[in-house]
Length: 297
Length: 259
Ligand SMILES: Nc1ncnc2c1ncn2[C@@H]1O[C@H](COP(=O)(O)OP(=O)(O)OP(=O)(O)O)[C@@H](O)[C@H]1O
Ligand SMILES: [Mg+2]
View 1 (cartoon, rainbow over the protein chains, first blue to last red):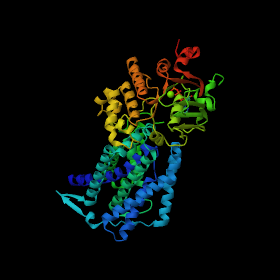
View 2: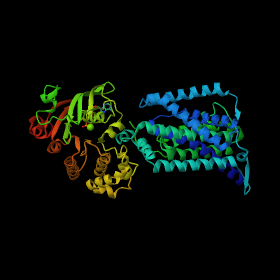
View 3: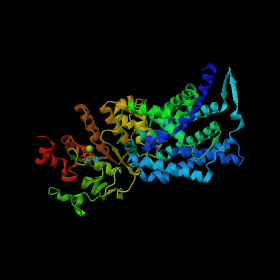
View 4: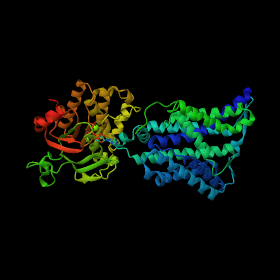
């Protein structure tokens, strides 16, 4: 790999890792508070991308499109919490997992009916599609925007969880939900906040994914959510910083693996990712960054 | 099994004892039954706590003390029975509403938020409070009771010693400005000096007018400070009376005071 190719892939990997991170944060947040692995989070991402598609088709300016798509997606995420998850709070982990798979499949099929299986070209603004050349390295503006947006949102999120009362209540609940309730924290408020934040980040991730890939389709949420799941496992499930680190590790691993593998093997990149997951889980079931504290009861 | 149940504890208008106490109790737990799945952990417990009283709840391991306190806090729902507080039915309220109503708890095992600072832990205790301006004064009151917490404010809760964590758990519960304070084994696992400090604070809180329901395995100490006490065995109240009465009771002496 030449130096310029390496540099190009570096930015590419940062971009991919950033999207995984935005998705993984939502997964980790909801898991931390509810012990729920929300596979339907991928469909939230997909719906965010489609919302943007339709708002853009209405001829609105792109920033307005993003804002409306985020708001729509948050509403969908909250509806999902209310309808599918509130009634089974505290149920066994397996029941939670199966419910989230069911919600995921239902949303996929609903989207196939509503939007058609045919991929749609994503209306990325032309300014973001350009390529810059810096010191002989070609850099896509999409990747730069992706990284910038992700870092900005993560910085805001950090401020929120460390500086606000609701954010502190969320951290407390993730650490010990029973004690949090004894403090007078309303569990529902915290859960709703986690779904709202996670859905907003997923909507942004869906839009960035659309810009990256160039098209969107109803099953597009599956791969990002699986990758985000792997990232959270690497990071120790439920830890938000862990999930972010895991996401970037995964982004880099994936991009360089593809760059280094002979062409005929690069189609198996996802197989390599999941093989890596199995190896990690075999040797460090608590994740690479997770502490080995026993399972919460 | 309930043959020894104090006659004064049966239902009816005489429940609150004889003359001189016409006021209804602040907390009345009536015949609650609580299950973990198919296992019945609390089998029809009734108890009262009157305003400004310090009531101890004693009993050996697994008697159902913690389950009773958690049910009062709304973490578990009784399958039958009723809990009233200040005349209102609490039985179906969510835990955060029960805290807002004036009942806070320092739970068994302290349950400090280890990754949060001492300050954050304390302020979380004030979650239901509307009067945010009063918080500074309340922090000072907690530091007055537990001066060491002031030095630890910026430290993560998980780095405190066991005794300091217990103080934090109690301080945090006080930040809600409770009318009724539930303490679950505040002296468990602490060195004798620390146990004494904790009991001093309990007495001081009582003197300041806080109503307290205290769960303890240290029956001797608990009976010294308590106005009244209940003894729980396998999920039922088997004895009750004033602290002095129970301390003099040969059965209590044998089973809990280790004579
Ligand atoms: N989560 C649970 N699941 C099933 N059974 C439980 C659970 N928690 C407690 N129990 C059982 O319920 C009964 C009462 O337990 P509880 O913790 O209320 O007792 P306790 O009086 O507080 O005991 P200790 O002095 O050990 O704290 C015990 O038999 C216990 O084994
Ligand atoms: Mg107990």
